[in-house]
Image (tube, rainbow, N blue to C red; front, side, top):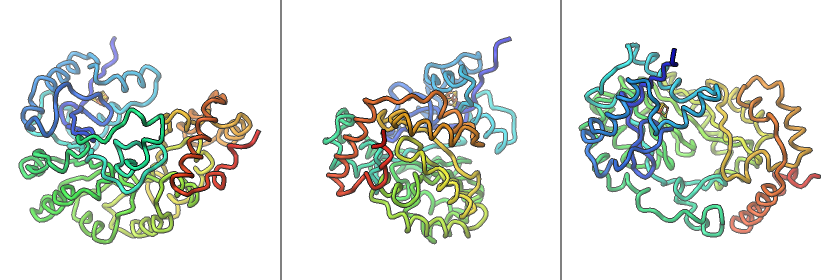
Length: 374
Ligand code: SF4
Protein backbone atom coordinates (compact mmCIF):
# COMPACT_ATOMS: atom_id res chain seq x y z
CA UNK A 1 0.00 0.00 0.00
CA UNK A 2 1.24 3.54 -0.82
CA UNK A 3 2.47 5.53 2.14
CA UNK A 4 0.00 8.23 3.25
CA UNK A 5 1.69 11.53 2.46
CA UNK A 6 -1.12 13.85 3.57
CA UNK A 7 0.10 17.19 4.95
CA UNK A 8 -2.19 19.45 6.93
CA UNK A 9 -0.18 22.64 6.29
CA UNK A 10 -2.00 23.81 3.10
CA UNK A 11 -5.34 23.42 4.90
CA UNK A 12 -4.40 25.52 7.91
CA UNK A 13 -1.32 27.63 7.26
CA UNK A 14 -0.27 30.65 5.22
CA UNK A 15 3.44 31.51 5.09
CA UNK A 16 5.32 34.35 3.46
CA UNK A 17 8.92 34.70 2.40
CA UNK A 18 10.76 37.79 3.57
CA UNK A 19 9.99 39.32 0.16
CA UNK A 20 6.24 38.86 0.67
CA UNK A 21 5.80 35.86 -1.64
CA UNK A 22 3.39 33.16 -0.51
CA UNK A 23 4.16 29.58 0.43
CA UNK A 24 2.44 26.66 2.13
CA UNK A 25 4.83 26.47 5.09
CA UNK A 26 8.32 27.73 5.91
CA UNK A 27 9.88 24.95 3.82
CA UNK A 28 7.75 24.80 0.70
CA UNK A 29 8.55 26.51 -2.58
CA UNK A 30 6.58 29.68 -3.26
CA UNK A 31 3.23 29.55 -5.05
CA UNK A 32 3.32 30.99 -8.57
CA UNK A 33 2.32 34.63 -8.97
CA UNK A 34 1.06 35.26 -5.42
CA UNK A 35 2.21 38.12 -3.19
CA UNK A 36 0.66 39.35 0.07
CA UNK A 37 0.74 42.95 -1.12
CA UNK A 38 -0.81 42.15 -4.51
CA UNK A 39 -3.45 39.57 -3.64
CA UNK A 40 -6.10 39.70 -0.94
CA UNK A 41 -6.13 37.04 1.76
CA UNK A 42 -9.27 35.61 0.16
CA UNK A 43 -7.63 35.43 -3.28
CA UNK A 44 -4.67 33.58 -1.82
CA UNK A 45 -6.40 31.28 0.64
CA UNK A 46 -9.30 30.22 -1.61
CA UNK A 47 -7.47 30.66 -4.91
CA UNK A 48 -6.56 27.99 -7.43
CA UNK A 49 -2.92 27.47 -6.33
CA UNK A 50 -3.77 26.61 -2.72
CA UNK A 51 -6.73 24.56 -3.92
CA UNK A 52 -4.58 22.56 -6.34
CA UNK A 53 -2.13 21.63 -3.57
CA UNK A 54 -4.94 20.61 -1.20
CA UNK A 55 -6.40 18.35 -3.87
CA UNK A 56 -3.00 16.80 -4.54
CA UNK A 57 -2.63 15.89 -0.87
CA UNK A 58 -6.17 14.48 -0.80
CA UNK A 59 -5.14 12.32 -3.80
CA UNK A 60 -1.97 11.28 -1.95
CA UNK A 61 0.33 13.05 -4.45
CA UNK A 62 3.41 15.14 -3.63
CA UNK A 63 3.01 18.74 -4.94
CA UNK A 64 6.15 20.14 -6.64
CA UNK A 65 6.30 22.79 -3.92
CA UNK A 66 7.04 20.12 -1.29
CA UNK A 67 10.27 18.74 -2.70
CA UNK A 68 12.22 19.34 0.56
CA UNK A 69 9.89 17.15 2.61
CA UNK A 70 9.82 14.48 -0.09
CA UNK A 71 13.61 14.41 -0.29
CA UNK A 72 13.96 14.13 3.49
CA UNK A 73 11.38 11.37 3.74
CA UNK A 74 13.01 9.42 0.89
CA UNK A 75 16.14 9.41 3.09
CA UNK A 76 14.17 8.56 6.25
CA UNK A 77 14.96 11.99 7.73
CA UNK A 78 12.12 13.53 9.83
CA UNK A 79 10.32 16.10 7.67
CA UNK A 80 8.48 19.36 8.25
CA UNK A 81 5.32 17.45 7.22
CA UNK A 82 5.69 15.21 10.30
CA UNK A 83 6.10 18.33 12.44
CA UNK A 84 3.10 20.17 10.93
CA UNK A 85 0.79 17.15 11.25
CA UNK A 86 1.83 16.55 14.85
CA UNK A 87 1.43 20.24 15.72
CA UNK A 88 -2.18 20.22 14.48
CA UNK A 89 -3.07 17.13 16.52
CA UNK A 90 -1.30 18.45 19.65
CA UNK A 91 -2.81 21.94 19.57
CA UNK A 92 -6.13 21.69 17.72
CA UNK A 93 -6.86 18.18 19.02
CA UNK A 94 -9.20 17.56 16.10
CA UNK A 95 -9.06 15.32 13.01
CA UNK A 96 -7.22 16.83 10.05
CA UNK A 97 -9.38 19.24 8.02
CA UNK A 98 -9.99 18.08 4.45
CA UNK A 99 -11.14 21.40 3.03
CA UNK A 100 -9.92 24.96 3.47
CA UNK A 101 -10.91 26.64 6.72
CA UNK A 102 -12.55 30.06 6.36
CA UNK A 103 -9.31 31.75 7.46
CA UNK A 104 -5.80 30.40 8.05
CA UNK A 105 -5.41 28.88 11.52
CA UNK A 106 -1.74 29.76 11.44
CA UNK A 107 0.01 32.71 9.77
CA UNK A 108 3.78 32.67 9.41
CA UNK A 109 5.24 36.07 8.52
CA UNK A 110 8.84 36.68 7.45
CA UNK A 111 8.95 40.41 8.00
CA UNK A 112 11.61 41.57 5.54
CA UNK A 113 15.30 42.12 6.22
CA UNK A 114 15.44 44.85 8.88
CA UNK A 115 18.05 43.57 11.34
CA UNK A 116 20.71 44.93 13.69
CA UNK A 117 23.24 42.12 13.08
CA UNK A 118 25.27 40.98 10.07
CA UNK A 119 26.09 37.36 10.83
CA UNK A 120 28.90 35.91 8.72
CA UNK A 121 26.66 33.21 7.17
CA UNK A 122 23.83 35.64 6.39
CA UNK A 123 22.90 37.63 3.25
CA UNK A 124 21.60 41.14 2.46
CA UNK A 125 18.19 39.57 1.78
CA UNK A 126 17.99 38.63 5.44
CA UNK A 127 19.79 41.57 7.02
CA UNK A 128 19.95 45.15 5.71
CA UNK A 129 23.08 45.78 7.81
CA UNK A 130 24.92 43.70 5.18
CA UNK A 131 24.22 46.45 2.60
CA UNK A 132 27.46 48.32 3.28
CA UNK A 133 29.65 45.21 2.83
CA UNK A 134 28.14 42.56 0.58
CA UNK A 135 29.61 43.91 -2.66
CA UNK A 136 33.09 42.95 -1.41
CA UNK A 137 32.23 39.23 -1.48
CA UNK A 138 31.94 37.02 -4.56
CA UNK A 139 29.50 34.55 -2.98
CA UNK A 140 27.06 37.47 -2.45
CA UNK A 141 27.47 38.95 -5.93
CA UNK A 142 24.01 37.89 -7.12
CA UNK A 143 22.31 39.78 -4.30
CA UNK A 144 21.14 43.36 -4.67
CA UNK A 145 19.30 45.90 -2.59
CA UNK A 146 15.79 44.68 -3.27
CA UNK A 147 12.74 46.84 -2.45
CA UNK A 148 10.63 43.68 -2.01
CA UNK A 149 12.30 42.97 1.33
CA UNK A 150 10.69 46.15 2.61
CA UNK A 151 7.23 44.68 1.99
CA UNK A 152 6.08 45.09 5.64
CA UNK A 153 6.63 48.88 5.40
CA UNK A 154 3.96 49.42 2.73
CA UNK A 155 1.90 46.30 3.16
CA UNK A 156 -1.85 46.25 2.61
CA UNK A 157 -1.86 42.77 4.16
CA UNK A 158 -0.25 44.05 7.37
CA UNK A 159 -2.14 47.36 7.35
CA UNK A 160 -5.39 45.39 7.31
CA UNK A 161 -4.32 42.96 10.04
CA UNK A 162 -7.50 43.61 12.03
CA UNK A 163 -9.48 41.73 9.37
CA UNK A 164 -7.64 38.44 9.85
CA UNK A 165 -5.51 38.46 12.98
CA UNK A 166 -8.33 37.72 15.41
CA UNK A 167 -9.15 34.52 13.48
CA UNK A 168 -5.75 32.86 13.82
CA UNK A 169 -4.58 30.47 16.51
CA UNK A 170 -0.83 30.68 15.83
CA UNK A 171 1.19 33.67 14.69
CA UNK A 172 4.78 33.03 13.69
CA UNK A 173 7.14 35.99 13.30
CA UNK A 174 10.56 35.89 11.75
CA UNK A 175 12.77 38.38 9.91
CA UNK A 176 15.17 40.08 9.78
CA UNK A 177 14.66 40.76 13.44
CA UNK A 178 10.89 40.73 14.14
CA UNK A 179 11.12 42.77 17.35
CA UNK A 180 12.34 45.72 15.26
CA UNK A 181 9.24 45.75 13.05
CA UNK A 182 6.69 48.39 14.04
CA UNK A 183 3.70 46.59 12.53
CA UNK A 184 4.55 43.47 14.47
CA UNK A 185 4.33 45.51 17.66
CA UNK A 186 1.00 47.05 16.58
CA UNK A 187 -0.42 43.55 16.05
CA UNK A 188 0.70 42.42 19.50
CA UNK A 189 -0.74 45.54 21.17
CA UNK A 190 -4.01 45.13 19.26
CA UNK A 191 -4.43 41.51 20.36
CA UNK A 192 -3.83 42.48 23.99
CA UNK A 193 -6.14 45.50 23.85
CA UNK A 194 -8.98 43.42 22.34
CA UNK A 195 -8.47 40.66 24.91
CA UNK A 196 -7.72 38.15 22.14
CA UNK A 197 -4.15 37.42 23.19
CA UNK A 198 -5.10 34.80 25.78
CA UNK A 199 -6.22 32.42 23.02
CA UNK A 200 -3.28 32.94 20.69
CA UNK A 201 0.07 31.17 20.48
CA UNK A 202 3.10 33.13 19.26
CA UNK A 203 6.26 31.72 17.73
CA UNK A 204 9.40 33.77 17.05
CA UNK A 205 12.77 33.43 15.43
CA UNK A 206 14.68 36.23 17.11
CA UNK A 207 18.28 37.16 17.84
CA UNK A 208 17.11 38.10 21.34
CA UNK A 209 18.88 41.45 21.50
CA UNK A 210 15.69 43.53 21.82
CA UNK A 211 13.99 41.48 24.52
CA UNK A 212 13.20 43.57 27.58
CA UNK A 213 10.73 43.64 30.47
CA UNK A 214 8.14 45.45 28.34
CA UNK A 215 8.08 42.62 25.78
CA UNK A 216 7.90 40.03 28.54
CA UNK A 217 4.94 41.83 30.12
CA UNK A 218 3.14 41.89 26.76
CA UNK A 219 3.93 38.23 26.01
CA UNK A 220 2.59 37.27 29.44
CA UNK A 221 -0.90 38.09 28.08
CA UNK A 222 -0.76 35.34 25.41
CA UNK A 223 -1.72 31.69 25.71
CA UNK A 224 1.84 30.66 24.91
CA UNK A 225 4.96 32.26 23.45
CA UNK A 226 7.76 30.17 21.93
CA UNK A 227 11.03 31.95 21.32
CA UNK A 228 13.72 30.41 19.17
CA UNK A 229 16.83 32.39 20.16
CA UNK A 230 19.78 32.33 17.76
CA UNK A 231 23.21 31.97 19.29
CA UNK A 232 26.40 30.54 17.78
CA UNK A 233 28.84 30.07 20.62
CA UNK A 234 30.48 31.53 23.69
CA UNK A 235 31.48 35.20 23.86
CA UNK A 236 34.41 35.52 21.42
CA UNK A 237 33.01 33.21 18.73
CA UNK A 238 29.43 34.44 19.05
CA UNK A 239 30.59 38.07 18.78
CA UNK A 240 32.67 37.26 15.69
CA UNK A 241 29.94 35.28 13.92
CA UNK A 242 26.98 37.49 14.92
CA UNK A 243 28.71 40.88 14.60
CA UNK A 244 28.17 43.42 16.19
CA UNK A 245 26.29 41.61 18.98
CA UNK A 246 27.24 42.26 22.61
CA UNK A 247 27.35 38.79 24.12
CA UNK A 248 27.25 39.89 27.77
CA UNK A 249 24.18 41.97 27.14
CA UNK A 250 22.58 38.99 25.34
CA UNK A 251 23.12 36.84 28.44
CA UNK A 252 21.37 39.53 30.50
CA UNK A 253 18.34 39.06 28.22
CA UNK A 254 18.50 35.31 28.80
CA UNK A 255 18.56 35.97 32.55
CA UNK A 256 15.43 38.07 32.22
CA UNK A 257 13.74 35.26 30.29
CA UNK A 258 14.75 32.63 32.83
CA UNK A 259 12.47 34.27 35.41
CA UNK A 260 9.66 35.18 33.01
CA UNK A 261 6.10 33.78 33.29
CA UNK A 262 5.78 30.10 32.44
CA UNK A 263 3.79 30.70 29.22
CA UNK A 264 7.00 32.11 27.68
CA UNK A 265 9.25 29.27 26.53
CA UNK A 266 12.71 29.79 25.09
CA UNK A 267 14.89 27.43 23.08
CA UNK A 268 18.40 28.15 21.85
CA UNK A 269 19.03 27.74 18.14
CA UNK A 270 22.55 27.19 16.87
CA UNK A 271 23.70 26.99 13.23
CA UNK A 272 26.72 24.68 13.37
CA UNK A 273 29.53 24.86 10.81
CA UNK A 274 33.30 25.16 10.55
CA UNK A 275 33.46 28.25 12.78
CA UNK A 276 31.65 26.92 15.83
CA UNK A 277 31.88 23.14 15.91
CA UNK A 278 33.79 23.37 19.21
CA UNK A 279 31.15 25.62 20.78
CA UNK A 280 28.25 23.19 21.14
CA UNK A 281 28.94 22.38 24.80
CA UNK A 282 29.11 26.08 25.72
CA UNK A 283 25.70 26.69 24.19
CA UNK A 284 24.26 23.61 25.87
CA UNK A 285 25.57 25.02 29.14
CA UNK A 286 23.69 28.31 28.53
CA UNK A 287 20.51 26.30 27.93
CA UNK A 288 20.99 24.54 31.28
CA UNK A 289 22.03 27.68 33.12
CA UNK A 290 18.99 29.67 32.01
CA UNK A 291 16.53 26.75 32.22
CA UNK A 292 15.59 26.89 28.54
CA UNK A 293 13.45 24.00 27.39
CA UNK A 294 14.55 21.43 24.82
CA UNK A 295 18.17 22.13 25.59
CA UNK A 296 19.34 23.20 22.11
CA UNK A 297 18.15 23.03 18.50
CA UNK A 298 20.89 22.49 15.98
CA UNK A 299 20.81 23.38 12.31
CA UNK A 300 23.70 22.73 9.95
CA UNK A 301 25.45 25.44 7.94
CA UNK A 302 25.42 24.35 4.27
CA UNK A 303 25.82 27.82 2.81
CA UNK A 304 28.11 29.62 2.21
CA UNK A 305 29.62 26.26 1.23
CA UNK A 306 33.08 27.27 2.50
CA UNK A 307 31.62 27.55 6.00
CA UNK A 308 30.47 23.93 6.13
CA UNK A 309 32.31 21.40 8.28
CA UNK A 310 34.30 19.82 5.45
CA UNK A 311 36.28 23.07 5.13
CA UNK A 312 38.11 22.05 8.32
CA UNK A 313 41.60 20.49 8.16
CA UNK A 314 41.45 16.67 8.24
CA UNK A 315 43.14 16.44 11.66
CA UNK A 316 40.42 18.71 13.07
CA UNK A 317 37.70 16.67 11.38
CA UNK A 318 39.16 13.52 12.99
CA UNK A 319 39.11 15.26 16.37
CA UNK A 320 35.50 16.38 15.82
CA UNK A 321 34.45 12.86 14.82
CA UNK A 322 35.96 11.36 17.93
CA UNK A 323 34.42 14.08 20.14
CA UNK A 324 30.86 13.66 18.90
CA UNK A 325 30.58 10.04 17.75
CA UNK A 326 28.64 9.11 20.92
CA UNK A 327 26.74 12.40 21.29
CA UNK A 328 23.14 12.04 22.46
CA UNK A 329 21.86 14.16 19.54
CA UNK A 330 21.08 12.22 16.31
CA UNK A 331 21.57 15.39 14.36
CA UNK A 332 25.12 15.86 15.64
CA UNK A 333 26.04 12.20 15.13
CA UNK A 334 24.67 12.33 11.55
CA UNK A 335 26.48 15.59 10.88
CA UNK A 336 29.91 14.02 11.41
CA UNK A 337 29.49 10.89 9.28
CA UNK A 338 32.10 10.53 6.50
CA UNK A 339 33.57 14.01 6.83
CA UNK A 340 36.35 14.59 4.33
CA UNK A 341 38.46 17.72 4.14
CA UNK A 342 37.93 19.99 1.12
CA UNK A 343 41.09 22.14 0.68
CA UNK A 344 39.42 24.59 -1.71
CA UNK A 345 36.73 25.40 0.85
CA UNK A 346 39.34 25.97 3.56
CA UNK A 347 41.18 28.45 1.35
CA UNK A 348 37.93 30.28 0.52
CA UNK A 349 37.03 30.38 4.21
CA UNK A 350 40.38 31.87 5.21
CA UNK A 351 40.18 34.49 2.40
CA UNK A 352 36.65 35.37 3.51
CA UNK A 353 37.66 35.81 7.15
CA UNK A 354 40.66 37.96 6.15
CA UNK A 355 38.31 40.31 4.31
CA UNK A 356 35.77 40.33 7.14
CA UNK A 357 38.62 41.25 9.53
CA UNK A 358 39.64 44.19 7.33
CA UNK A 359 36.11 45.53 6.98
CA UNK A 360 35.07 45.06 10.61
CA UNK A 361 38.41 45.58 12.32
CA UNK A 362 38.41 42.06 13.81
CA UNK A 363 41.01 39.30 14.23
CA UNK A 364 39.61 35.94 13.28
CA UNK A 365 42.79 34.03 14.20
CA UNK A 366 42.10 34.74 17.87
CA UNK A 367 38.92 32.65 17.59
CA UNK A 368 39.71 30.16 14.85
CA UNK A 369 43.38 29.30 15.26
CA UNK A 370 42.55 25.64 14.53
CA UNK A 371 41.94 26.49 10.86
CA UNK A 372 45.70 26.93 10.53
CA UNK A 373 46.77 23.56 11.92
CA UNK A 374 48.22 20.89 9.52
S1 SF4 B 1 4.71 18.61 2.74
FE1 SF4 B 1 6.34 19.75 3.72
S2 SF4 B 1 6.83 21.41 2.33
FE2 SF4 B 1 4.79 20.62 1.78
S3 SF4 B 1 3.35 21.89 2.88
FE3 SF4 B 1 3.73 20.08 4.11
S4 SF4 B 1 5.34 20.67 5.50
FE4 SF4 B 1 5.33 22.18 3.86
